[in-house]
Image (cartoon, helix red, strand yellow):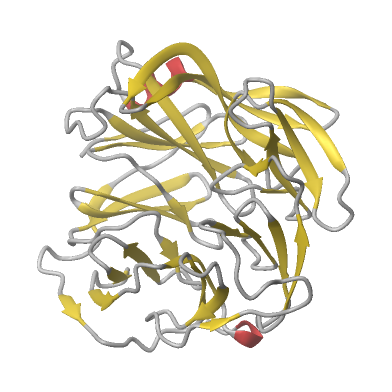
Length: 366
């Protein structure tokens, strides 16, 4: 697969190699002794808790304001593990070790942006008011004091900006495509928004398509994913087609810095839903070839593929970045990939358990 190099004043080397031999072993294992703890939402009961990386030992959290059961089906954890947004109803503060929590209710009608709503060094979170009405506003809220700041119209897919009281927004264009039962709008540009600051354009769709080597004729939608420190943004580019299962739809991934300078790009056979490691030095996603791993060091990015039968997205990096956890809730399997040698461990999975973060163990180990 070709990797396209974007160079604007930087010397950037991109190389593609095999991160593991073609015969990398796949092991069906009942248990793995891996460090850290996985934050889990039980989507049947709505209980939030922690479990071992192999899925065993699930223990629900408890604490002031946090009910034993909720109706939540989604949860997202801040990169430092200090906050969890459960559904769109509560912000949960995790104490070190995670045995106790403090929960605060959210205003009805708010919908936090995903997959990463936390902003301004994880002191704020970005949400949309009156979502889906065409009259919504994008706001940030202080997770402790509750103060709100207006970030402009809710006019596209967004994530929080880790460095500022703001958001990274893939602004919708005018073209619409019917996708199954839904209508999707194409993306016209990606911009950085901040409270009390003018918006700045990170990238235009036309430039991203050129960088990725994609034709300009089809309609595309762009999804941003930001590194934990906010220095890099991964932009997944997906062609909109009426058939949601189309195998001919084109996809790509472009990584930029905050100025919009391209660091690397790669064509993908499937929609790329990338995951960042906690240190921001690695980016991974799954495609038909297995696990695609992008390692970034300053101005140098190296891409490799681990040929393995792994399914389930999005994936989670281990705290130290040496493993990747991917859950397939359809086949009820958990895949844990050892990145150093490409070993894949397949574990049984409770399909009701949604893994939302892999954090260090108590005391910071792992």
